[in-house]
Image (cartoon, rainbow, N blue to C red; front, side, top):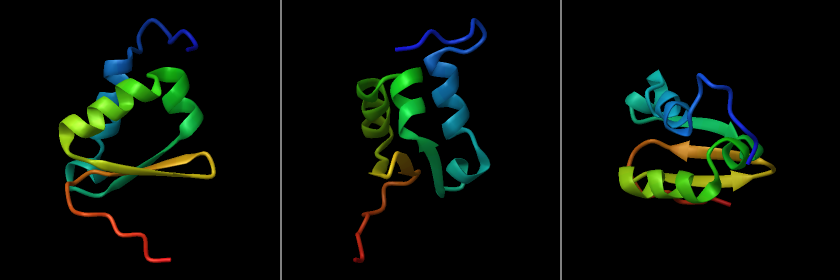
Amino acid sequence: MTRLPDHMTPEIWMGQIFSSKSAREGGIVRRKLRDVERLIGWEAFETELRRRGYHAIENSGQIVIFCNNAPVRVVC
């Protein structure tokens, strides 16, 4: 994992994701997979998603986070 700037911790980075307007309203947010892996690590990210009851999907290097606990259905 790459070292974060002194002012940025994994907790602050995750807090910024989940305090965004879209996340607060139960919407979706998107982040690059490489940023998740580089900045906080996949295990910590997945643990936080489970703690919040959220779902996420990965496609083509992007992570789409559903900031609610509604079921996710892949249409096609």
